[in-house]
Amino acid sequence: CQATLFFPMPKCLFDEPVQLKVDRLKPRQQVDLRAEVTDDKGIVFRSSATYEANCSGTIDLTTVSSLGGSYTGVEPMGLFLKPNNLHTRFVKKVVSVPCLVNFSVHRSCSRVQASSYLVQRRWYLPTSGFQCFKVYISSFTEIGPHPAVLDLYTYGRGLSEARASLLANRGFVVFTVSLYGADDNPKNVTKIHLEYFEEAIQFLKNQPQVCGSGLDLLSLSKSGDLALSIATFLPGTVIPPLMLDAKRVFATKSGALNVKYVINDPMAEDNQATLIPIERANGRFLFVAAEDDQNWDSCYFADQAMHQLKHHGKDNYESVFYPGAGHYLETPYMPFCPSSIHGVIGKPVAWGGVPRSHAAAEVDLWRRIQEFFRTNLANDSNLSKAKL
Image 1 (cartoon, helix red, strand yellow):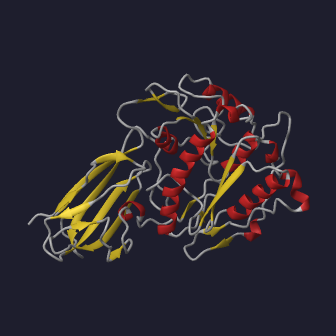
Image 2 (cartoon, rainbow, N blue to C red):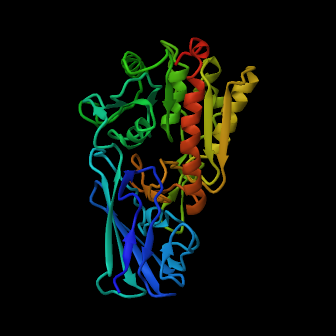
Image 3 (cartoon, rainbow, N blue to C red):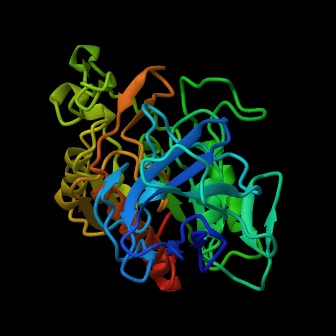
């Protein structure tokens, strides 16, 4: 008989989990489930897992363990998370076009044609209810107001709208900006002028959909420096860069470089001038650190920042540390990326992370970010005290 693949939701937002089922199999029949998706660079991500049907001829990925393949154990989203790609990161630039994930069922260990196919559309923006402006602001068209977020994503070339789009779906007015390499931006930067971001902030706060006088900043990786600098914006102040030592770079077994300890210690006496005076910021901070981060010693840097605030009598911060998580904590259900080509170095760099722990951290963090933003913009009396 013909196996049948089934999704309760044939289309959904990218950050939503799904329940994949297979039925009309023979009792205890083993089959291979395969998934395939192509990113905006044309790179194909493939994953597979072997499952055994129950006595009724059904497989439910939310309860049944994978026996082998790209992963083992009960992982309902494993086919989305575990592609077999080396040094490759999933790239999504055109958020108005959904990701098409192709699923198929094959007789176990068979190379013949699949017995069943199914395609799921995973959207970053819904087909209606949103506006995308040339200035790359994504916001609800329904009556607001809504909390405002300036999304700084990572410090890299070009513009990424994926996270901003998904956050806009959750009831925020989101403005994402590029630092270099997009449209009329410079191709590279050697100095960062915070006035550029001040203009972006004023533009965002002037939008009619925005509530209150404050806004949230969301950053990742190197853009964390930008977020802290913006929150501490001091006109006329120049902060020198924290230098690095390339001798601390070493190669891993996969061929990717480990650059975790390449940055000099900011607490060393010679580097004190590089510290961002975050104690002068009045907004609240949520510091997030991945304990298996192989790109930065992010736990140390988060501890240092909190110590700096505490030393100045500040308690306007909270933190979350994720065991087994790697550097790139993305929106949920992105393909796991333990290493990829570094935008500055131009070579594969290790990001770290244990797949299952990393995926769980992304789901939890996505919820925490939204709760943190809503909680800290809910009270206008607090907003008036904040610079942002």
